[in-house]
Length: 327
Image (cartoon, rainbow, N blue to C red; front, side, top):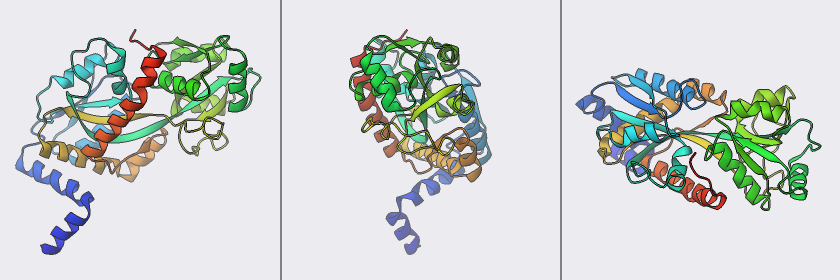
C-alpha cells in the first residue's frame, strides 16, 4: 500500500486512470446516457472524429455517449446548449479552435466562452495544408509569397467562412510573411470554395490536411506548405511553412471536450480519464491518424485549460487586427 501511494505521488499519470473507475463505481457519473454536443453539421470533419470518440467511450463507460449535432450561428447555438446544461457531466461539448474566436468575433453572446466552460480533455490536433491553383506560375511557398508581395490586392483567397480555422491560419500566414495583401472570400465550407480554387477564381486556400490530400495527390492543385512543425507522412515532399521561409509559423485546428463550468472536480477528472483511455487505444490512434489527426492521450484538465488560454491569446489579436466579424 505504501509503495502504491509513492507511485501515485511520483507519477501524476497514475491518478486520473484510478479516479475515474471510483466515480463510476459510486454511481455518480455517468448516471444516464451522456450527450456529446457537436456544434457542427453531421458528417463533417468535426463530426466524424466526434462520433468515433463517442462510440469508443460508450464501450468503456457504463452508459452510452450519444452525439447530438446542434448547429446555428456558427457554433453559438450548440455551445450555448452546453453552457446552460446541468453541471453533472451528463452534457459535454465537443469543440474546436472555433471556440477561441467567439469572444473576438461577436459583440454579444448568450454565454462566456471562457468563464462558462471547463476544458476537460484535448482529443488531438490537425494540421492544415495550403494549396494554390495549379496554373499559378509558382512551385514553392517562397515563390508564392514573392508573387503576392509584388502584386498587392490583385489576388483572392478562399476559406470555409469568417473566423474558421482555415481563415485564421491564412491570416496568420499573410501577417507573418510580411503583411501580404490578399483579399479574403468566405464560403460556406471549404467544399464550396474548392471549385473556385480549381478554376482559378481563387489563387490560394488552406484546408484541413485530410480534405486537401486527394486534390494534391491527384495534381489538381499544388501543395505549398503544411502548417505543422513537421512534414506529414502522407505528403513527405510538401514542406512546412517554416521550411518555406515563414519563421515561427505553426497552426492547427484541434478537437477538445469541455464541460459546463462548475462541474464537480471528481467528474471532470473521470471524464478526462475516460477520454485519455480511449485516445490511447492503438485502433483509435490509427483511425484518427488516417484523418491526419495527431491524437493526445496525456492531457489533464489543467493542461487542457492552459492550451485553450494559449490559443485564445494567439488568435484573438489576429481576429481583431484583420477585422473579422461574424456573418
